[in-house]
Length: 182
Image (cartoon, rainbow, N blue to C red; front, side):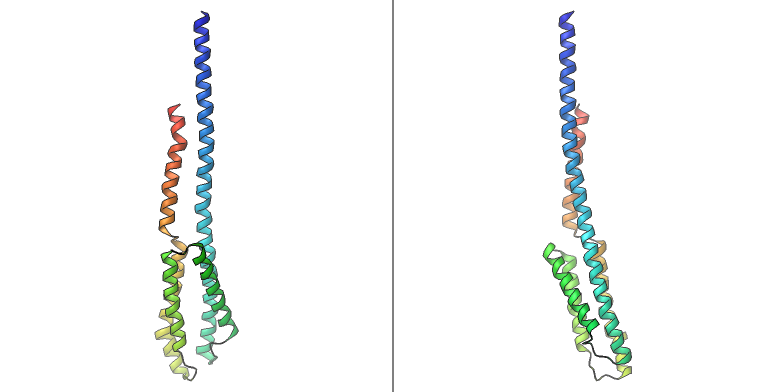
């Protein structure tokens, strides 16, 4: 009778040790899973923050351009210059964080087109020429840049998200496996 009791006690102790080990592994893996999820969320929030700053800077530039075309002001207004400085600073920060981001490269290309479109404008244009330039040339480059920024905001770099998702899948399996085995 003592040997059966001892065997049952040892078996219970062994199961308890296995359960404690499985619980410890689960807690560790859940913390890793949580930190990976937080990293994905932080990266998305950072992209949104940069895109918002770029859109605000673009709006400043756009207001200055509208004033230029309607009332004949020059593009050298402080509002336009502030918008250019803010935009360039924000895109530089974004490129610093993720230099191989294709969406940022598209924003840079659209910005080059936008800046060259503005550089083509002449201060000697009449009001009718200003309107024609605005409607035919400027609007197209403005919306191209605006669209590139919005695409960057809603579509963070796919390569890093794919890496994170595959890591999360692995972590989920690592978290669940000890419980299933136990």
